[in-house]
Image (cartoon, rainbow, N blue to C red; front, side, top):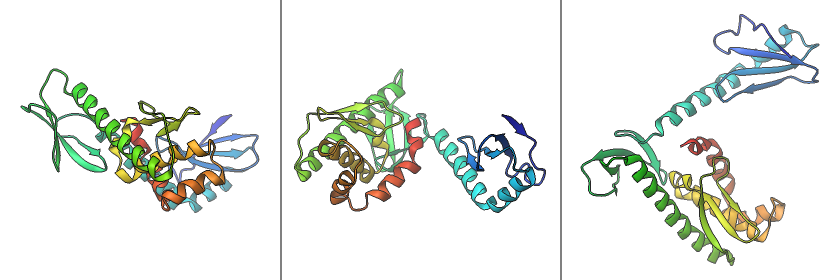
Length: 230
């Protein structure tokens, strides 16, 4: 497959890259870098492709802006004095100074100025995640009439949670960055797997019985998947 020279009418603003191959349809994709990639059949002319691009201009620009915004938010998720990170859905400013211990206030997370403040903070953050998740699992397991074996943290970057056949629940510690409603959704999702080890209609009915608005929570987590890069 070879890249085809882009149209001058869309160069710069849409910045497309056209790839032709033995396929039957045209697909427009915005990759993780915000680049527009057009995959098209060999028999489709560049003129026809660019007509489609122009017709989809608003959608393309919107998606590129979303990627740009996400990249900016990813860059802000750093542990340094003055940076802002979410903690249970609320933005907190990192303050590294002459503190005796880590202290959470309404607006700040105060971290002692030690040899490795990031290491100390990450240990604290994971402890908070485990405590919060254990509390949520205990609450919803009782509500749903389910039993489980253990709650563990994971360092997963592709999954918020998992449930094994032995009823061991593992959750990404990064859930502590999310609002409690989203953390609760992942807990209910994994607890529901104790009853249904699949994503069948019965499984989603189980989730919906506890959280009628679960679809909105799923959408939020998908939109904030960049939290996984923290």
